[in-house]
Image (cartoon, rainbow, N blue to C red; front, side):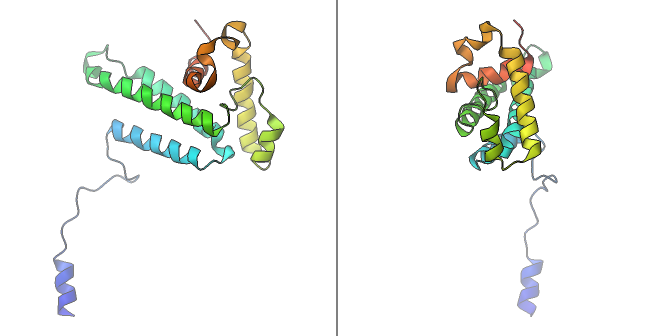
Length: 169
């Protein structure tokens, strides 16, 4: 019994406590954690998650566009912008692969097939349908519909950015 007590009193003090979510308090670590969660979610292959992940990709695009090295106090973030945009591009490519072509940002989205994939989950169906409708409303113009920059695996991140910031020149 004495030895057990000795072991308990000889424990090393804990390292710096982490926040509630287990994250450090830096933006970079938070973005890495978000990217990790997006990857894990996509690899899980649950189509009910597609709308949520697509919204997260749009939010990440907004974050990347606001990390601006033109403002003096943000110059240190300039190199981070390039890395963040590459990360978002990689996540968009993974999304494109996992969703079999970037669903619902597609001209020929098959709602019935998606309903079957999500086993009738009404919330997922509603959000995916709304995303597809918003995509089609903006992309109907021939200059977007036929532009190769927005097509295929390599163009999907451009498609997300186009959707996020609007269909303007």
